[in-house]
Length: 236
Image (cartoon, rainbow, N blue to C red):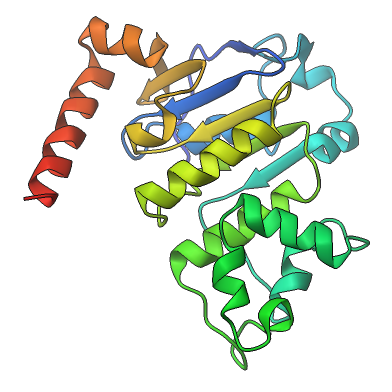
């Protein structure tokens, strides 16, 4: 394992261009570790993970990192303006580009209500963002770099389901013909993915589309049933 990261066993998948892969599973099942293998924070075994037909181990690191837009669950924001935070990976981005990225991640309306809009400074001496606002700002930051591969590692967990839906719709248009990986605890986030991987204790125990996995009546179907029940209780 990697420190407290679970050891992954028998992991292999081929992610095709233009497809969305989703990863779900209990806490500690290895979801983030798997994502870290894709981005080569850790090296996967050779011939285990393919992206667009290329073995990730064979891709030069700088090429891989340049084509990745990675949004972790807790992104670090700097004590600068929110506009500078969004443009962090693309310092030459102009105001229109920054607004467009903010629109995709559904943070633009919030920012336009801030005292200095996109020039509003964040951090100790400035505005404090809510968890959901931070996550949406981090998504803007990834989107503005126009990534070939977008990875959302549980980065919609603090966003309400309506806003999440709006973000996912826009990301689908943006990432058409490109590859997305979405890690989530919520089935609502991932149900439209082309391929869903279900993990448990470092292994892939199920894979398929949402409908196929519901029919399989395995772990995915039971997570789904629990989430539907708790949503129904919340709506009482």
